[in-house]
Amino acid sequence: MSLTLPQCYLADLPPEAQVTPALIRDAWLSVLRNREHYLVRRATSSILRDLESAAALWRAQDSPYRRLALDLGPAQTGFSAPILEEGLSQLFGSLTVAQLEAWVEQDLGHPSRLDAFCATGPERASHRRSKAVGPSALAHITAGNIPPAGVLNVVSGLLVRSAQFVKCAAGGSWVPRLFAHSLREINPHLGACLEIAEWPRERTDLTEALIADAECVTASGSDEAISALRSAVPVTKRFVAYGHRVSFAYIAADAMGPGQIETLAARAARDVCAWNQQGCLSPHVIYVQETGAEDFARHLAAALDAAEQTHPRGPLPDADAATIRSRRSFYEVRAAASRETRLWHSNPSTAWTVVYEANPQFQASCLNRFVYVKGVDALETALQGADRLRRHVSTVGLAASPAHASELAARLADWGVTRICPLGQMQDPPPLWRHDGRPALTDLVRWTDWEEEAPSHTHP
Image (cartoon, rainbow, N blue to C red; front, side):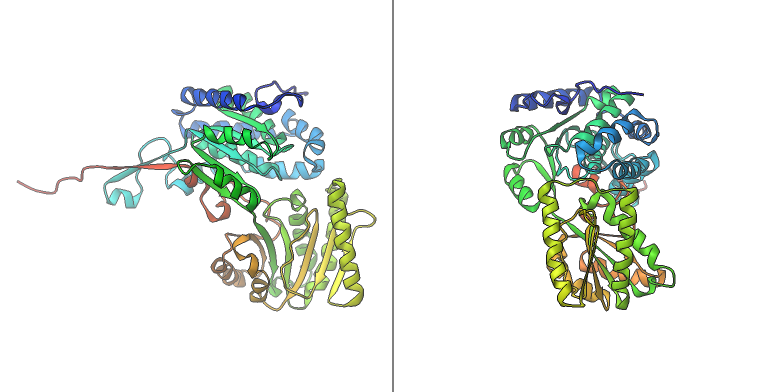
């Protein structure tokens, strides 16, 4: 089944078409008008069903949206078709009514909180009911490095009933745009409350026009980009920012039982390969406790080599490939001079690289399946090695015995990690994951408390 996309969104316009501030203002007027007609009074349960139906279009193997994403996606996104297929299957497999309803209840305390005044136990005790209200105009400024982020932005905005404008990085609108079209197929009115566009960061005139009509702005990207946007958003508007984050993994000695090293290496390879390390949840470093680190690094190299046969990384821009070759050369020299450094890599390509070092200092990867393995005597040593990035660590992939895992998780939480997950699942957070330790829906809404008159307990 073929699919021809109609020109419904600014991102559908041909390359020669120019996005202007006037077009952005007109787009805001359109989605705000459609919100008033089609979205504000819709029940949460109805929105959830439509979202699940749109996700189902992507889960079906013969889906035209899925096929178009996989056929043209490598050229549009830079990810190979197998990488796209696995990542999109994980994303849309999680967008179910049950998961989305749990997200609303987790963040807002009640599944009907966006529909009407509701009360939980503490509210009932103080004779209050509360309602959450989303912003009328919600602008998303996305980093564009991996597709799921833009899709989940759209989902969160629909849940809080906002008219939305998603500004993607240049070249980053492909999957969000296709998702918007799938929403239009399920419910044209829902898709009409949404705009998708892309332009380069240098077009500050367009970004200013986007911000001007927004009530709330969300943004993800580098700390420098977030800082620039923060200064451009008036204090009268809500600004929800997600800046630079890195992640690492920790494998405890009690996880390295007989026959387990191959399994752990395969799980770690999955985390490294997912979205080619482009997401903030991808591991830069894998810390391995005690004496098994070098052996683990060797197995990880074999696992990455095997993954390249089934889920190839895909070609890189010349500058990125040159960076990998340069860094490899550095570690080749170091490995020749010391047994405390070892290097494994694909040959002759730059498809994957594993560096083993005894030094526990956290080392930022140049990404694209370039990963460090470091031996440590305990978790505390790993945390000391990563301490300069403490406020920038998002996720830790953990492998430990059940008895030991709770102790390690408590220490990681105290240190500042906002998400801990099993090794092999670092890039697979559920929709209700608290991004950077904050409830995403709560960040978007304002609350109205209704203090009701308390029942009288006086007697004549």
